[in-house]
Image (cartoon, rainbow, N blue to C red; front, top):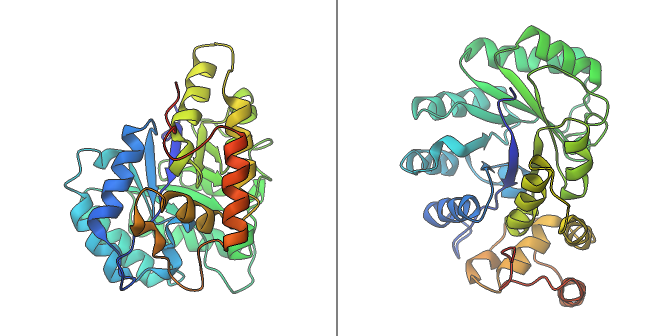
Length: 294
């Protein structure tokens, strides 16, 4: 059985007016996503502005997150380029009984498969009880995992390297590893991914599409006719016209003004883009008040 299965949201981080992490609201939002239908939540992924949030703020959140009744449903992203800071963050998180991590290789520098294997090897050797989901997103870090690299890591560390979030989409259709979770990063890939044996998804837009995605997942598992997959895909495509973080914060700020706060160099949508987003979503009968599936 795969370690990670189902619908996972890459949760947003909520900031205060001074652009400091609002720990309570960020946790409350993550819990809300689970209550709305997500099997779990990845905190401090790229959608959560992980590269822009300080490690001290991340540690503050972890120290409170342990109190959540859903603590076993969380995956923690590291969002750090520094290996030593990544190791420190994992050490603190594991001291609070979190052991599932979403880890992307460092950004900026150019490297290949062997260097990536060395990077993950150092982490696993430090934390043999960790469970790591590889984060494949060339657009953000400049490196794209090959099938061969993932297979080598999974073979070398079968108990620790348990899956991959594939946001570059070069793996999920071809990668086949027993007892290994493969999770594309888009709802538009969900149904096809399930049909070819993938485990689910981890996506940004599940901050708002969780109930729809969960219904697609459950209907597939129960061999029922798909009734909302087209709408789910169209909502995802609508948000993809824009920066996803900007679009999601703009959308959710209708209901909670805290979502207005966003770290530079990110921003909310312009008035022109905001108007187009809302008009396009209205055509799909998708708005802040009807997120649940009827």
